[in-house]
Every structure is written in structure tokens, then in C-alpha cells.
Length: 485
Image 1 (cartoon, rainbow, N blue to C red):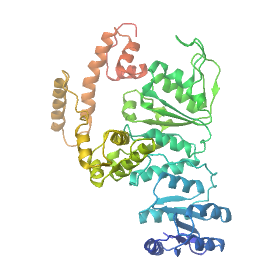
Image 2: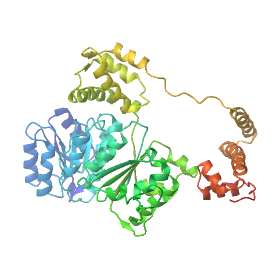
Image 3: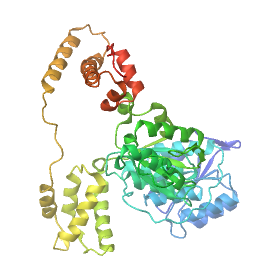
Image 4: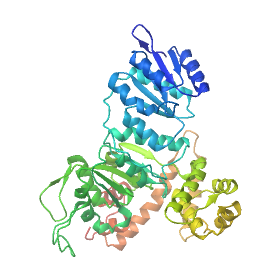
């Protein structure tokens, strides 16, 4: 697995003030065929670099004489061909982003996986040198982008890798996981940080006004348009437009958005002249877009335009080790905002980690701020947390039974029996299509009957676009009524 440097084995320079880490790395890299030189300080590492030694550097951030990140620009200036891999126990977003901005080839949080480190070493020695990104302004790290869980470390690394690219990003995750905060981090640490960051929530705007809000409108374009208005795309020109809850965007606006992504221009509502914009798009949703595509509620071609870099935010229950640090931070932030200072004891933190947090980080922050205001003592104990969690409303349960449940349940049982009676080689999964067709066909027929065959009205009632409805009518062999559709 070793990579040759000239005619011999590649030499890896390791700088870390922890003797055990130096030993582990020396043994692992040596077994993989590399020459290894280790030091506990930055000054020795820099001397080796000046003397032309080494084909790759692996350095810690915090060392007794100098910060490892501060060495990277000097190394890149003196020896631009020398790749630098950064390790750090300060596993925060800011550390990952700073490493990328300084020109590190890769950032690895401690504790690291040896197999992953060896893969990074091999990749670093094999890949060509990339240009050093420009320096970025210092930006204070904002929570809830905090945590040392593996899931959050991957988010930090993804954000760091995207600081030098303007790629479109699709952020998915449950409500309250911090999707807008990730979008802001992508903007604040990216190449467009000098431009505007404009956010719009599709679910918060009346469907009939979404196009006007996004693309602007001319005077008299619709009832109430008493003057010309600039849309969010123009407001975000040169910066980033964050489209939150993209799954709630109506079909007409989806078509317009697709054109902007393809052509880089649009016309305002009621306008005729094309308007050119240069905007980076970051989209987010808590909904399952593949299901919306299947139902004809979201354009598949738009999905692929937006899903260039998918990024999933984990729910809080998947990053339990981050709950206590987050809770303590929110208490500290509440104190900084002028609320009473509170402490969280260990037993209380343990109880917080046992709760499932359906509202995710947002729910945790709200609880901590409420405790800062309402709890009379200085220390928040397990009993206080227990009482607060007991008083919380129960999470939504299953929907109550409806009149349709009985026939649907009967249909499901019948098709299950039919499927089980088939030979083992029968196509799997057909029960889903059978039950769906049994429900969908009479539903569409009933809506068409109610609209007297008007397919435009029927599509609106069903939440489908007209072309999707026509395809379903054809595929399900539904007779078309003689009406106005």
C-alpha cells in the first residue's frame, strides 16, 4: 500500500506532543511501508520541512511551542507540493474549517480510525496538489453546530470541504436539527461570505405568492400588486439563497426554479425582460422527496439539480454524547443574554441523554432557556429535569381510526393472503402496487365525478399536477367523463 517517493518509500513527518499517538502512528505507517519521522513539537517539524525532508506531514493542532494550523501556510508557501493532514482533539466545526482554509489536505478528529488515516495518507500522496484557498475572515462558531459525535464530525468535515466550492447542497433532517445553521455555516465560511445570505421558508408563504416572493413582480401583475417588488433571487445576487422546506414549493414555482438553475436567469411575475443572477442555492427539507416525486408533487429533474451534494443532519437521539455539552452551552448562552446563570449536574445531564427529543436541538435549547428563567435554584438536578419531562405533552401518536380503515385493512389482508398463496419465485413487492391501485383508482374516479370531469380542478383537489393526473388516468384505465377537463 506504500507510495514511493522517487525510488524509495515515501517519508511521513509526524508532529504530536502525545507520545502514545506518535508510537501508534509510527508503527501503523511503518507496517504499511512508509518511512516515519516523529517529533513532539512544531519547531522540529518546521526544521525538517526547511531541510526538504518528508513527502507528507501529519500534525496535531495544539503543540507546546506553536499551533499546528499556523504552520500550514508557511509550509504551503515554502513547499507547495507537501501535503498536510491535520489531527485535533478540538473536534469543532471551526477547527475543521480553519484546517481547510489554511490549506490542509484533510482534517481528522481525535480519536481517529487508523484504517481511515492510512487511506488518507495513500490518497494524499497519490493526488495532485490543489491551489491554496484564500484566507477567510474569522467567524465565531455558532451552535448547535457543536459536538464530538461521529455524525457531527462528518458534518464539520463536509462543511470544511465545501468552503472552496460553490456547489448546490441539499440538507435533509428532522425539524429542529439545525438545517438553517448549517446553511449559514456553508455561506459564512465559503467563497460567497462577502455577499448576502437570504433565507426563505416555502411552508411559511401562501402558495399563490411563492413565485412573486422568489422572483419579484411588476406593478399590476396580480390583485394587490400596487408597485414593483424585487424578489429573493435578486436580493441574494452574488451570495447564497437558502430555500427551506423545498418540498412545500408548488409545482409552478418548481418549473421557474428549474429554469433559473439551468439558465441563470428568470422573469419576474408580470415581467418580460430576463433578469440574470449569480446565486448559490442551498435547499433543505424534513420531507421524503422521493415519495413526493412518486406522487407527482415534486419534479424529479429539479431534485437532481438540487441534490448535487446531499447532507443529512442527524436527529439528537443519534448523537446522545452531544446532548450534555449542548445543554450546558445553552445555559451559558442564556446567561450571556442576561438570564440567571444555572449549572447542570451530572445526574441531570444523564437524564437528558435518556430522553428521545422529538423536537431535536431546538427542543433542548427551549428547555434550557426555560430552566434558566423558571428554576429558582442555581443547580438543575435530575429531579427538576424529570418533573419537566413528565409535564411535557406526549408526542403525536397514531391517527385515530377512520371509516376507511376497515375496507383498506380488509383489502390489505386479502392481498397478503393472495401473495402468500403464490409460488416462492413470484415477484416481491407487488402487494404495495395492488393496494395502492385499489385505493387510488376509486379515489381519482370519485374526484373526477365530483368535478364533472374537469381534470384541472381534479388535479388541484388531489394535489397533483395535470400531467401526472393524466398519466394516472391512463395507467389505471379510468374512463374519462365528458365534461370540461
